[in-house]
Amino acid sequence: MARNRGQFVTEVEAILKRTDSTDRVEEWLNDAMITIERLFDWSELRVTNTAAIDTVADQLEYDLAALLTANAALAFKSIIDLRYIDGGRSRKLTFIQPQRFDLLVPSPADASTAPPVWYTLVGATASLYPIPDEANDVTIRYNAWPATLSADGNSPELTRADDAIIAYTA
Image (spheres, rainbow, N blue to C red):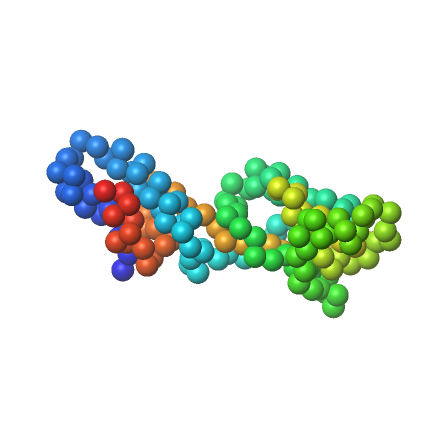
């Protein structure tokens, strides 16, 4: 069973031989989890969000930063894929590098609309091509950042990283 925040803090304070630094140890603990998460895409943090983007007919670009601002629970580390959901025409969209997208589709706004097949990402903006011809959902599968441990009973989502968390914290 994974340790919880209170157990981590107690163990790190014992290593430090101090009990007056709980707030700092809690901060270090969360920083350690982010450091460890940056090293590898942990399978425990692969999340599928099924209510991510509502496409709009004739709209090319979708602001993922606004999506994140509106829903603080979404913490994308990296996007795995996008899927266009439209009943019998649903499909996984193919990622195209932005430079390749620009070569293949120099003027996407001039193209006809249809169910999208490709997507590209520039910063926090996703572009779908062809431009959607009607409003539908696009699901986002992504690797998430670990949730912050905010109470003593919270356990990290990185269940296989207990020893590494303590080592990085201490």
